[in-house]
Image 1 (cartoon, one colour):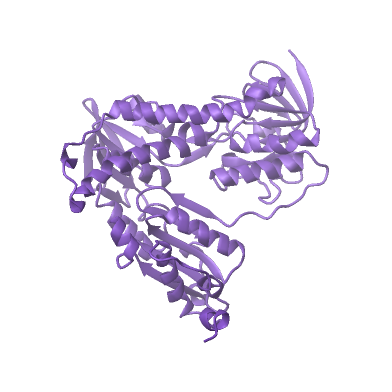
Image 2 (cartoon, rainbow, N blue to C red):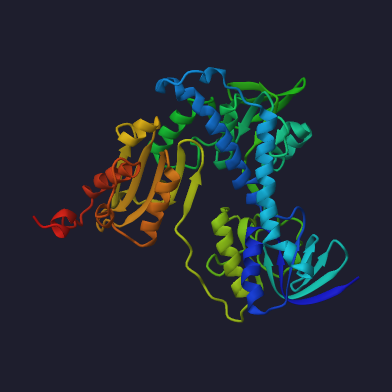
Length: 468
């Protein structure tokens, strides 16, 4: 049994772990990056990237259903080779994973160890190889895995998760998607657009994480045009021959496969955290400071999906950098976190920026709104279903947040996020140029609607900049 002493041990080589090494390495500290399971990030292997590849295939194939309105003939003869499409998705996925590995762990030599680790005491880790690592500082960045209810495990390969979906060489004829958050909506809509028979289920009363009643209503009406959605009831699964029967209240369907998109659970259960000397919450997750990533006042830091706080790639990257910086320095420093941003790449995009509707004090909030139907560019694109709602402080006009379902929402959401990050007011934003005709004009209309409701008014930008 070998024993190694290091300044910093980083558990997990995903986005958070790799970003932690980017701060620890240049500091000159001696470190080990220890990873159990498949190397490469969740994003590249089973998350952001392969899902977007499938979405692109599905969107391109789906466009055939609109071509007749433009006078394009022959579109009804178009077909898709699903195994070839899946091979394309997997080829892209493999390229993304290879790129991650080539630029990270492949070049670390002995600083990268492929093994599972658990705590023996607050400073000592035991690897499944039998070796031990004694570290002055430890960063926990072990990621997460898809949730599968224990009762569903008996159905074996008939229940898919993102860990198994992207390994399929062909797609089933019918799928029930259970859980209509980000991945459920994205893959559910893509499957439907690839001519798979899809039904969606969720115990919540809304889809896509929305809380604004107008956005939630529009999202449900829009996505439900593509496949049936059943909300508000717990799901039961039973075997029916070679298929599965999925039942939620009075609704029941028989399908070939179930896609379980019920969220992800942190990979902490095999770390023996009871030996780490840190305080845990009821779910066994270490309590930590989100600005320092420090667990209590200890030498242990936690970053990425494993802490269950902000399971999004750019947040995991930030957390890894914060944890890595603090693990490499004697003084623990707090860092300001980014304004929340969540984008669902279903079509139209569902986006949450800054404060969500459920976070607001409605007595102190003004809400600007525009529906996409009359927006010229949206009509030209054939993408005029949607709504944008922007929240501002009624007294100051400062932009607080937004929920929206709109084409090119991924771009509009960034613009609003940057504005909130700069603490801009609605007056500041309507002074900026909006070209014609662009989807950003929908944002302009919502801002104008919001501006009319706030107390603080700015001088007309035309009068100020170009006096007549």
